Length: 171
Image 1 (cartoon, rainbow, N blue to C red):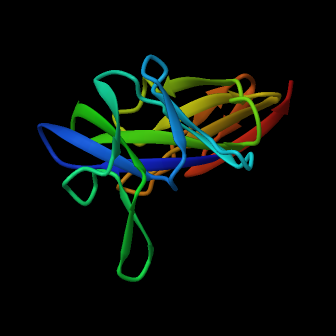
Image 2: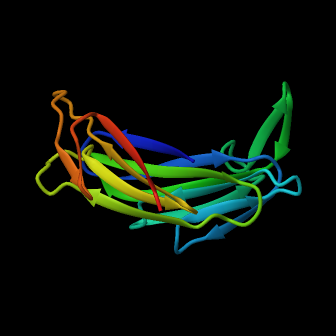
Image 3: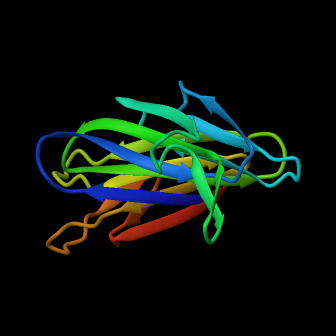
């Protein structure tokens, strides 16, 4: 899998949109889990999961009037209708938004994510994640403070103090 981490600075409440463009294929949505996934006849599929669930909505667009509403350009001067997924989140800035992209062949993989917000930190960038995707269990920790100082992170007997730490555990 891949994790996309968007860190937004600023003040006040804003609507934040994240867009994902797909080839012309079937897209399925699980609004409760904030998960979409493709179904390709060739078996090359993706699941996209917003880790943040609160105040987040999913919309699948195809061939609307605006450029972001469901078009792709397969070549110069050509455009085709294709699904575009928009995750819209209402949130106060600063905030970090995290999205998982998981490739799979058949059957959407089991995905569980636990977010660990460090209580001793006042930075939105200091977050940990315990992620289970099928038979893999990973612990990730991000610390990207503006002053460059590391934050100590503890989870399940592990200690890390880097800007990014990653551990894969056998289940």
